[in-house]
Image 1 (cartoon, helix red, strand yellow):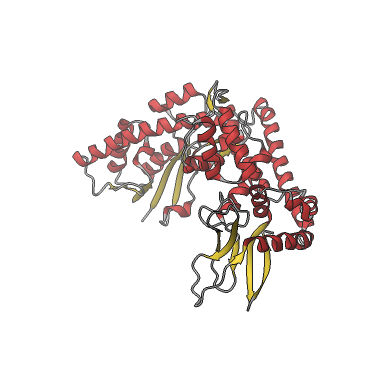
Image 2: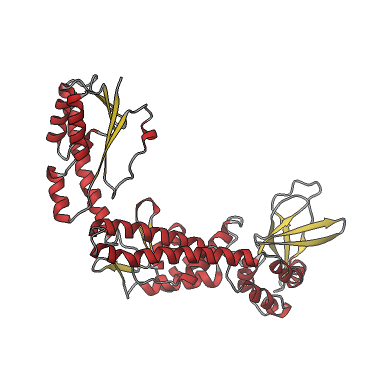
Length: 446
């Protein structure tokens, strides 16, 4: 029994199949690649003039030595029009070749040329129309044009790229600056509504913070990103800081990122493993208030007693000033520098490839459309490398640790500012209870 396979792959839309991907013992695979030439030629191909040399070879081989089965992913790969697909199905079945579509409910033995096949051919026509639309979008990606859909708030469409909308971009910029200053998404959303009357949901605010467009990048399907396609609203350094703040806030209990007190969400009781919440106690007809840390869901009987917020704060500052420089000194900075250098060299190599492409076009080694496809892939690789580089700790971590290891630095900050810096360095604060006393253990992020 002889089994052959055929595939037609458009490099803009998909990658070619490996022989093992068919799931059958295949004697031979015939594969055609769609040519990425000019837009006018692409339009002619969509009308049925695309060359499928391997498909032609398949017919020649079947005339001399017919195959028993032909595997194909989808019937529309046999031609660019329904008429072409139908004619080639007739021709193959006349030679006694049984056709099996692996991604469609079709086998030639189950589909005689009748009404059922006509319905399938109509479905093929719709798929081919959809394919032509996706090919158009793919060619726009090669030109680094914005994808279809609504333009992000703060931008508008220009000539083949996003351009800043001067009337709305200050709102977005102020939103990012507020988040960078206070590290609170909900607080930044409330700030936007109060100052500008711009009401957005917390979910929308999170999408703004992670949207590549505001960073000067363009995002396409499958999360592919091209860097530096237009003027950004925030810098690369600000974008890296936003990502660090979002990762930091994700480790905290719900709604504590915008809490007023600097220790909110950080303190855990080692005895009952419960997070401690800040509670406020006042006396009637007096302005003075007392702050305590209490367990949220303590299972102990009797329950773990409350602890003075101010005492925990003072002990935390003391511990940070003592232990933070030691924690930073224990980091493997040579290894960190090696990682940064390795990523930087990888980015430089990819950028060198981009600079070589025009010369390859001039010498005729690459045609213009193949070079565009190669440039697109290289740019997505550069963007992925830059994203990895941005996740590494800042290079000035040692100097920052020395600066914040002074007690007066913490005492001069407001609770909101102190909250920001605590969460920049501290993962968790554990309260270790010992009869009537307690000790404090600070666990740093690094």
